[in-house]
Amino acid sequence: MLREEPLDALMSRAYAVKARVWGKRVALRGLVEISNICAKNCLYCGIRRGNTKTVRYRMSEDEVFAAVAWAAENRYGSVVLQSGEVMDEANALFVERILKRVRAELGDSLGITLSLGEQPDDVYRRWLDAGANRYLLRIETSDPVIYARIHPAGHSWQARRQCLRSLKRLGYITGTGVMIGLPGQDEDSLAHDIAFFRDEGVDMVGMGPYIAHPDTPLAAEAPRLGRERLLELSLRMIAAVRLAIPDANIASTTALQAIDPEGREKGLLAGANVIMPNITPQKYRGEYLLYPGKPCVGEDSELCRGCLERRVKSIGEEIAWGERCDPLHFGKETR
Ligand code: SAM
Ligand code: SF4
Image (cartoon, rainbow, N blue to C red; front, side, top):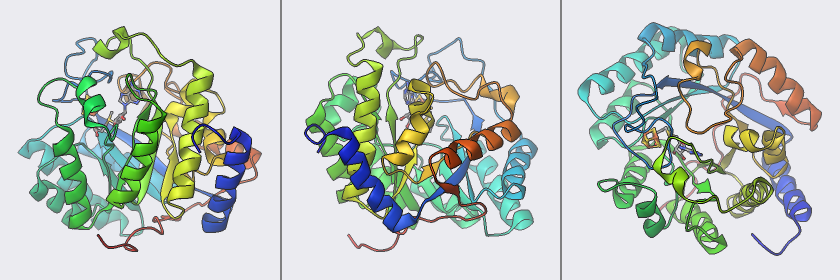
């Protein structure tokens, strides 16, 4: 599937499944990059602790609330709060307070996804109790050997998988994903990634190309794949995941758009059903640079909104305004 079927045919097959399960509709998740402070040092990431060129920020509680309220007013069905990984009580409380305030002032209809890295179970539990519904934690690769190659000592694949399992057990709608085009990764390891998503019973999948950031150690490794091949593999992965888990939410990620101006639309045509427009205040966007070439860094949320609607319409799809679009997969299977 990843290598034999012509790309067009594979995408059409996956798109037909997506259209049958979800209709010609695209779910929106407004992405708020609440902080670029990170205690980790992943060898590929532009906001890793060791990148001294990054100017660190953390949005205030009011700023995060305002971004979430903007999303609700503009009929985004859900938001994603994302940041570097900080594992301390101050951070746990900060997020907990925001969640409680959002639920108290904006109600329960908005879906709230967290993407705040590995945390102790009791913190995951507190955030769930405070109003979060979903959690995104990419495994990055299902191969522990590749994982070890792209992380420094002390970053554990097993610990990350354990976090994913805890999230699921605690009752989060759980998402994971991988980067595509990593050093040491081949088509067999990508096929294994898909089996991992299925076997772990995840409800949401977010995958995108790995894009080398010049101020990271991994960038020193020679690029293995050209942009075209990277795009093709990414689209094949989206299509293959749609065929393997028809009722999952699958994101067409910003990184796809970074390697092809129409990458996000192509991702939707390969079977993805979610896009994550950036609604971070413009003054912070330039400092949340995981990789170079991130789209929409200089635009404000209003501009992003209009541009997205046009792009989605151009491929014959509609945005599911105001709908949470929880993954139909959630709660179906038992492990
Ligand atoms: N810190 C949290 C975590 O690691 O789960 C959430 C934020 S982290 C920046 C979100 C995702 O960005 C990571 O899971 C990783 O897949 C992706 N990412 C980081 N650096 C990247 C790069 N150079 N190219 C593509 N994706 C990247
Ligand atoms: Fe931190 Fe996440 Fe980047 Fe790793 S991928 S350095 S945990 S922000």
